Image (spheres, rainbow, N blue to C red):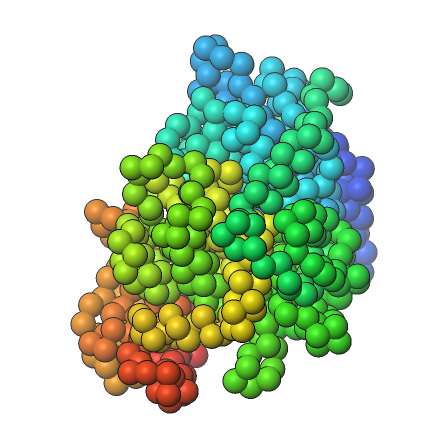
Length: 586
């Protein structure tokens, strides 16, 4: 990389200052090694300059997703210095919110990634020194346990150190607000605007680290009984009286994350068995050695689980992502005899239909709601419209939100919410976030019930298609190296909007950036065609991707017509995909 002598001098000076202040010897050494590289050969010096320029090109932006980035030294990486400044900003936000009227409280959790415990303890040290009553979970645990703890303890804030299903090189910092700071349906949920901006405004990257007080001790450890309370509360969601079947052979993978012990405990406590863990992936391992990406949605991520399911003749595969806030399910499709993972929209519809029966049957009273409160289903705008039809047929309310559980969990009176990216909230009175543990349990309950009836999850999907029309969906993700390209592609679509998809004229084009009475503004475009095909295109909020969500709906006259309807839907989706690619110029 070519830099002017002045720019290189300033860059080296910034790196030296950071290294002197860095509380982590490992990342301080990284910077010193890079600084030494500036004095090496031409190629080494250019590489070191480029790496330093990237690390000091700005600061991580704190927003509604908190922080998430690669581990390493510098203001554009996740490290103890960045976490200390972030924790300081969050502490000042909590103190300003309390204004001396109460002592703010916070609970902190962490997963099994590199530096997660370090970042949790760094946060605890800053909070404690600031006078915030601070609790830390007793060990590495799933994100839903932290979200549960925020509500169960009445904490004003929660911090979860996790990068969820990101690659092994990453870590992150997720923030929840509750207690005195947020009331109503958002209590205990992830932050949204304006809280993100208010916290970010208090994070001062120019502040010397030495001026931020840290306490060597003084925080407390959350009792193990709270973890047991979460497990017991989730286990009680299963209804032995209404849905007594427990004969289900389950293969489970924790994807090298922290959900294995908790998920298996819940399933076994609820009476399901046998539960067969994928041994190679059952324990936390920050290197994620058996998967390219620790995300159940990624190709190959479930290969070991599917192989074990075939070997053991299992009924279903349940998978959690590394922090266990998501759940995936796979089963053998009777039509093909092949195992496949169900799409998030398919599982969302199955859970919606199952919860509808639970509520309508009277066998299961919905916990956390008064008898006269309406049942409310919700899903993100990019998820299938099938849940809305299920809710409407049952006489329930349905709400559509922006993408992300920070929005879904805030729906007033929420009973069930989901988003297509494998996130499901089946017990909002326990966890105001997606929860792969409780969702996995109810998926098992549904699968066991269907098995006792001689049916499968695929038979249930067929029944939903007959009742509400075949809803077929697909996605296209366009990964970029330069984030500016995302803005350029969105600008092109706004200037040259597509006229049709798969031969069906666009009847409605909505720029989601303008917002509406129902939805806050967000960067995205929504197209509806004359035949009710829907296309939504938006930049990802967590990855350098442009994401395109497609859905077609086809009526089905009877069971015999289902195979042809599926083939026609697939052909239509392929045609829509081709038109989306053409519109994007890829």
